[in-house]
Image (cartoon, rainbow, N blue to C red; front, side, top):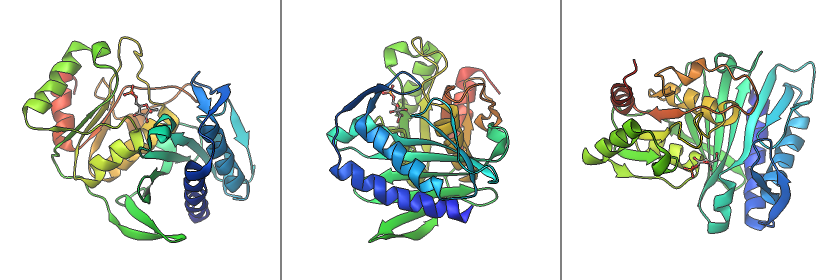
Length: 282
Ligand code: F6P
């Protein structure tokens, strides 16, 4: 697994450089979810593919930007599912974006995720790695290498509220719940980039990130294999919770297709318990 993490560190520097220097235009293609691809999405995908091509532990890759599975080393042990540049439409307004990696062993379902990692490209490059049995570890880039900063632990209750999706399409019980958090004093922190938004909640001790099922997207927007499950694992390892709109752990998801989505809620214990009450689920 260490060789995978070393590849992810190299990827972080290469994608950061691409963000700072490459063309920000459209690639004139759509990705597997029907979204318009930026040249930067394609380039980030190529950078990741190139780096994992020389890691024998990686059996195959599943990318948000690709339709199928790309086979690499049949004798390997892990499948890496990744979103090469999440929130890429924010690059042209110079906001933070990220890359997300889920490392799976066996069939691609949440219970077979063995580690996850994400990179934040912001004023600095940061990397968080989570493995079974330990707290997520934060690393920060200094010069050409990453330095370990410390473990991440969520408080029981936080102060931040990051509500995703278009409000007019939210279910009424979701709107009432989000309003109740603001009435309790929660502060709005939502950039539209899943990685920096979830990272902020993790580093500032807690809160809630929500992306519900909406009238236009009843199954949510965020993709299970590359977005939802890797972050669900992070939040649970940090002492928080991650559930869907039925109150089920996202770590029990069994995707039917690579690009399946799910309503998702990530937070510290207080906010998730309050959400379960508001949704009438256990
Ligand atoms: O998956 C893409 C993404 O940009 C996430 O990074 C982000 O959390 C979400 O979409 C934002 O969606 P919306 O603008 O609908 O809240």
